[in-house]
Image 1: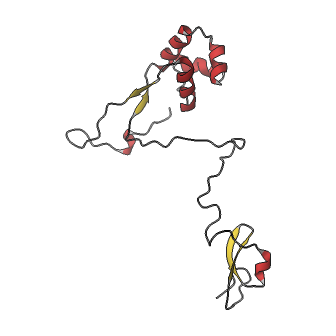
Image 2: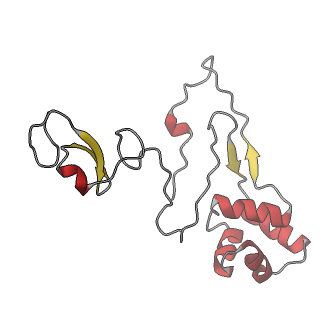
Image 3: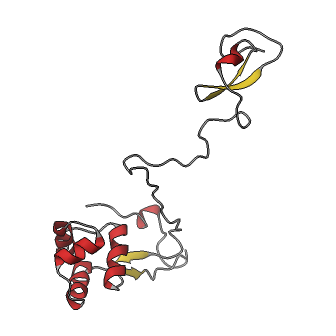
Length: 158
């Protein structure tokens, strides 16, 4: 057998971790690494890392199956948000502060120029006690209707 570090042929190889990489090395090269915690495998395999730019906070996304229910944003979401805001007696500035978005962004959402991100939709629904989603009533059967493709479930950004 051959040492993965120096290339020397030896009878017995020792598993060690050298600079984050698990290797099979000879007894002379074993001093350059540490004993691995587990059996040989790729480092970081199965670990969940924190995405960059999140300041160390983990982002949790609910696991959903697209075939369970189809939720789509109501067509007049801006008008629904504006009416609910006025009904609750909030100004644009107050609602933006409570939801955690910029006033200009909320104004664009209310005017229909900007579709809100899902996290803001949830915050707006909670703060205004409204629902901005409508359940899809499509059936997933191959009988009679057109065949569905992946494109039927993709939401394109404009």
